[in-house]
Picture 1: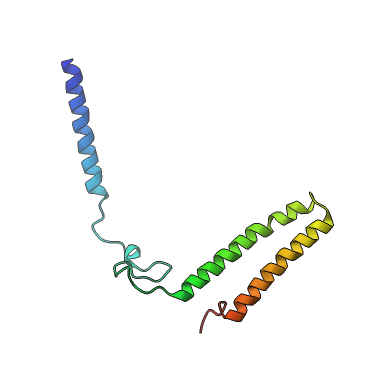
Picture 2: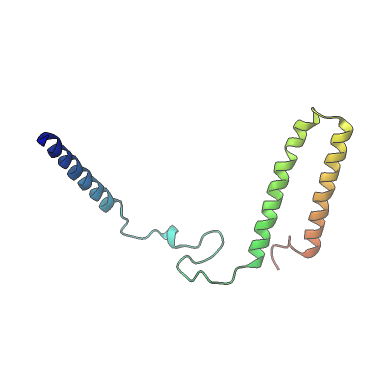
Length: 117
């Protein structure tokens, strides 16, 4: 019994020492330049989080997500072509493409696609 408790104490002491050494050695002394630089959105990470948000950046992000979902919906249409009738596939594909083109035309008319103004 004494050997077991002594062994446990040694194991715990050794584990604690190793964890403390790992913690001390893993700390970075100098802050990375990449960590303190603004990320993709352009915000300074060290400033206040209550700054006004760029509406242009938000609209571009939403348009990107919409086009991303459109691609995810268009890709399976080639596989469905072999599993359905050609007339049904043509009507569904044409309707989907017309909706996408109408949305693109609307974004274009609203000026959302103008990158520099």
